Length: 150
Image (tube, rainbow, N blue to C red; front, side):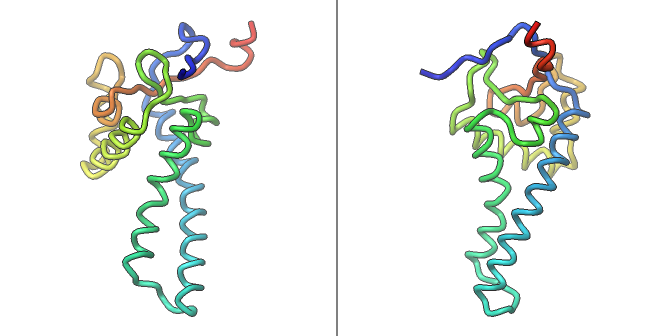
């Protein structure tokens, strides 16, 4: 049975600054992973630029696998953990695989429209972005450890 997250009354929708700050943290980790994949790709091609379809596919999959792994595992990437954010269903449940894929597609669409999908939270009463709306999920701010203990 899926676990229900604690302290549901202490959480609130995440704003744009926190979301973007978490994305910057995650971007640093993704760049490091891409450098590792690039190193392996160049090594496998004998020190030459690797232009194979498999290598390009691996480069495209790194961010998707990064987000999917962390969202499905704990509802938080490392950047989200640092900013006390979590992605969840409106009932406080962990998101499923379909919701993960829809969030990834919503994020890609949001960025391809120059970030409009993330600016959408200023127009939505519940501060939802396109990835939230497409997947039926929400990103919330968790209570601080001090507040959660009290």
